[in-house]
Length: 403
Image 1 (tube, rainbow, N blue to C red):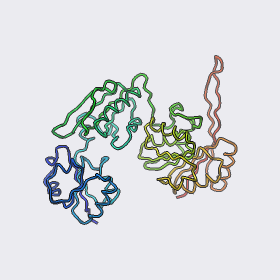
Image 2: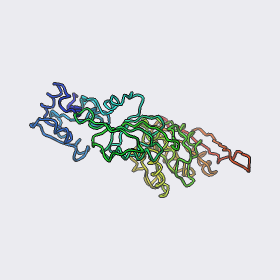
Image 3: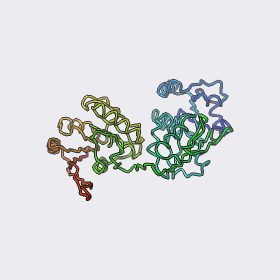
Image 4: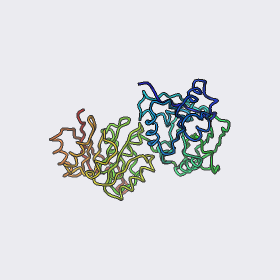
């Protein structure tokens, strides 16, 4: 089937940046779809004009109703970089959509800053929580950030300062590629611009102060990085657990009996467009998980309060990996989790009580799997000397579901 939707990226310079072929496609369109800013740049008055005012879901329905007409979607810059192009391809399929990108905000911002895109992080806080930034704020990191509006730069500056990165250099690049292009420069701690233009891209050169905490995205964050009530998978065991879960790009984790949420948060911090759902029935721990997720840069963690059997049918994504740190003494829970796991998925269970260990052994006798024991000793003071004190030994069960 030939493409029936054409997506045309437009820069701040408007139609002047388009070649004759793109202009002809816009002028010949029977249906033009875009935001108010895009519609204001074109002169095709004969076409039906639609916008995104009712949301993407409704717009997709309206586009489907007009299948067979000459449909042109107007987008900003590169439609496949956090843009509408990706939404249309996911919904209608790649064969239905032809995309003609213009230079996007990241390309233009990198050119203005003299930064090599493969050597930096690119992300968006447009339509996403500001706390997403926290995952990427590390000593020496350079970030290009698509923002929500003109308040975003000041909000980002405060976040950086609060985390001990007040010396970080910030550049706000307004209306990139247009006649109104402008640049604001400063440091996070001394950011003195009340507001920027709503259309802006942030360039952040992260500089850590002496009191800044640098939290690597490698598994095994310090225990004190998490708020918890004692229900925490300890650092060394957590690193070993994530290794057994084998996080792969785009995959989904269910963290059952999530406690502080440490496993699912570290799963998400690895990047790779992964998803995670933390299931916890204790209301106090649910609140702590949400705070931990915001602090550690994973506000996209889905937190579900309730008993697993009561909520499992409502969970949004099916799991490619399941971690069970709480409730391991319930054989029915183990079987229910195993049944929900996608083919080829991994189940990891950490058992610390005798009862949980016995249940895991019974489960293993029926389904198979590998067992290991993780014993950790940490040094601590005893008077003027130091001794090693053992943590509770963890029996770890790992099994891969047949494909």
